[in-house]
Amino acid sequence: MDLFKVSSLYLFWRLAWLARIRVIGRPITELREIWFFLRRFREIGRVRAARFDFLCLFYSRDCKNRTARQDE
Image (cartoon, rainbow, N blue to C red; front, side, top):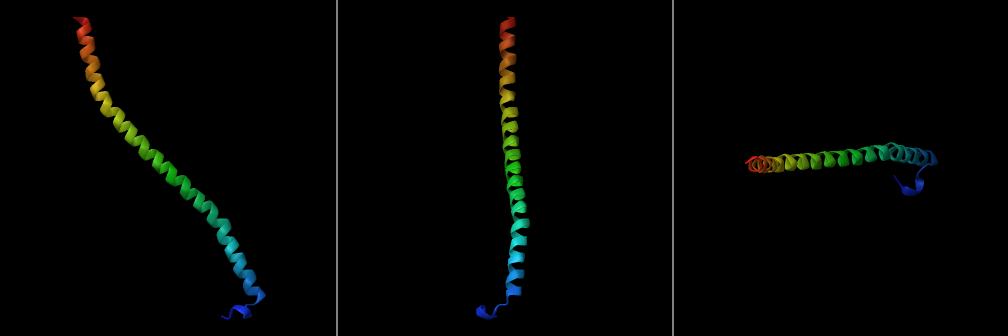
């Protein structure tokens, strides 16, 4: 299609199509970004929870040893 022989109707439909993509695409992109951050925070939460559980093993043993020493 020759660039200079493009009808105004074609340009209208092309701009309408691009505007449609822009109007619909923007919220979809934002939802994807929100979903990415939610997934990332969930992964961070899992890592922190696992680290907390791991540390609690040692601290709970240490607390048991301290209370046993205090009872003596």
